[in-house]
Amino acid sequence: MGARITFSLASSGGLEIWLNEEGRDLLVRELQRLGEKNDHFHFGPDDGSEVRVSTSAYRADDKILDYGKVLFRTDTWDGQHYPHVLTENTRAPQSQSTPSSG
Image 1 (tube, one colour):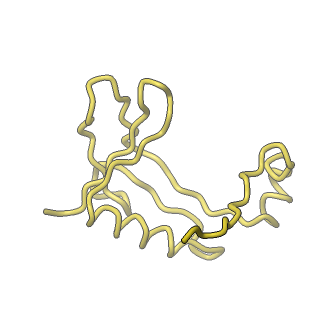
Image 2 (image 1 turned 90 degrees about the vertical axis):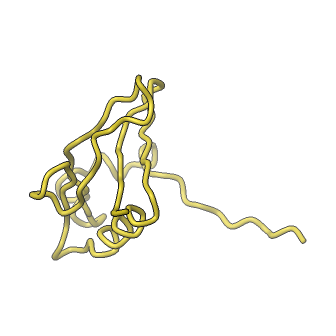
Image 3 (image 1 turned 135 degrees about the vertical axis):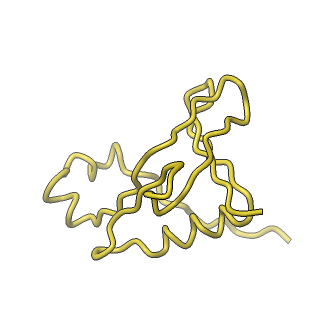
């Protein structure tokens, strides 16, 4: 079976990404290719998208996101064009390593 990726909004409003092994590999590969010279990719159900996605909902109340774009932006670029996203209040928390038990 080929890559299967479904982006949906659950009834709670949260984003969910459903994928099989091939879909995971494709999405990770496209994410890893992002950089300053290759700064975005499109997803959609048709051949015009770099990442093809499924439009079949897993649950009846899911809202499918069938078209979109993933954008790579450096802090320098954001600082010049969208400095408000760099404020401490909106910055994603840094992951902290925890001591392993065992």
